[in-house]
Image (cartoon, rainbow, N blue to C red; front, top):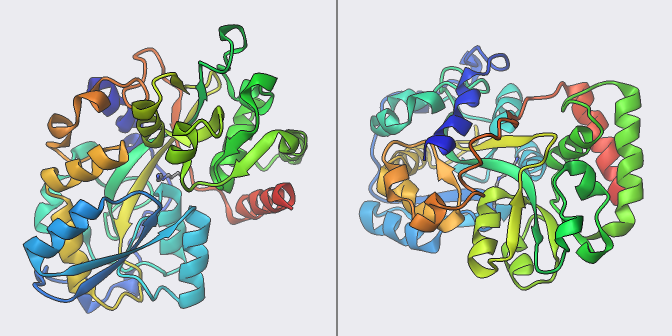
Length: 360
Ligand code: SPD
């Protein structure tokens, strides 16, 4: 699993972003850890990202019920928390850059994750990431990469795509392309395909991406982050943008599926467990997060989702199929996985404009 761990290192090494703990959002809830033994936790997470078996086990172990709603992108989560002022859920699962954005908007509770008894189980390289330098708001859930996959039984070897450039100019044998409903992942991939960097504010690069997406639109089948595993496994789409854990699950059903590490590079993301500022069941939320930091619980989530996690002891508990899948363990000579950065608000607004115009 050395390659998986190596892929994780740049995140912790990365600097910049949220440094200061937001004292204004510190509440009494940020104090001592109190283990709850009844009540409920409302979890809001990515679709298909938490096994029912684990929710059941959590209730049996702690007496706390877990109810789950699903979102399809960080921006959907952000919109929901903005609309409710951080209320409605007790635990939510933003990615790296979105932890920083939500914290900056005072939508997260500073609960001092280092005070959790199981904080010690977080691998050192996953502590104090650039988007939460004091672990005031977050602990890691799953991490992975955003690449694309294609069915090698449908696309000739001569046409096999190897780059984002190929992805956005697909061979006709690929048929309608699956695209994630994720403006950050799609625009970052499009920027890489034209040789530009994520978060660029260069108007000509952003215009080139807008033009590329406009020409790509007629080749897109479904724009969705939901049910990808089912659709690709069933052969409904032969090529699609996909997160590596989902690709692993597709490969379990369809061995001809290939996960591509694009020549230009790809995004390495990290999703996190955080507590919104308006959460009602804070002790229960902290009990849930602490419980998830047990290696066997996180490993159950990993083996279900297909993604790895930065918790000590999880690697040993991963299924052999995960340990041996290049979608999970990247080729040792691939060094182009880049941690997502938090773009400036101005650039985020430009991304949103490009995305809305692409979808309209
Ligand atoms: N099946 C759900 C996978 C969720 C992955 N989160 C991706 C975050 C990308 N920025």
